[in-house]
Length: 287
Image (cartoon, rainbow, N blue to C red; front, side):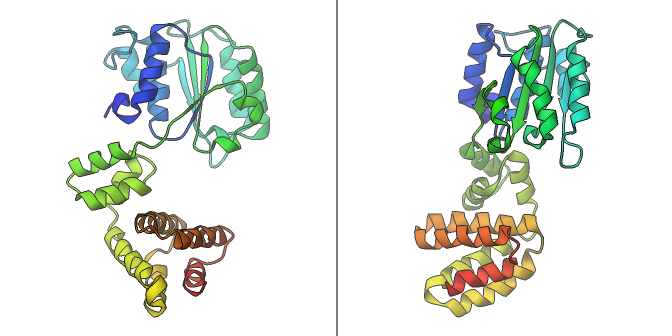
């Protein structure tokens, strides 16, 4: 797996940026598909001892340490629990006033930047507005709408869409049949979650039950009701239930049933409002 495979267009854009020496001091990467890998790649580009056409080699001491998150001038910040605390960001900003240990540059990567406390996010604005010439900030988020507008307006934004074709090919290379590989690629967020679904023991049972549920929606409501109970017992936690909704949307979309797709969206909104999974499926059958 290479960045050129995951995000070929974005990779080419950054290759041009690095060749022309126009790397910005603040980026917001929106989307999870290859964004963290790109952030590390850009960090490596600032320290690599064996640049090749302005690209990091990935093999030298600096590149390896950055990939292992063990390089003093590249810091990765992640939420503690469900929040990035203000003190964490303030400590990060204090590092901006210090010289790099390994060189002149410093790179700071903040994962799940949308989870920064409001005070933490506001603390970043000064750096973004008045960056040091050798320091770089890369913010990563899976939900761009939750990032402060004042931060977004001061960053260059790159969006990392899911490369579904790459995922499908990767799964087929792992031995999955085309139909299953295509379905998993459609619902997975990234390569890690796609591979996890291939190991999910109940995935095939879930798909079969959903197919029977869909088949009865218009023609045999009694059959769909039977599958509601089956589905409710099959997927018991929130993550599995959310997967069921994603699969429903993909399956119904492929069978061109826009009315039922709308009902799934409505049912999912009810579920997000804490109506039980079983009740919202029953609502779909009765509606």
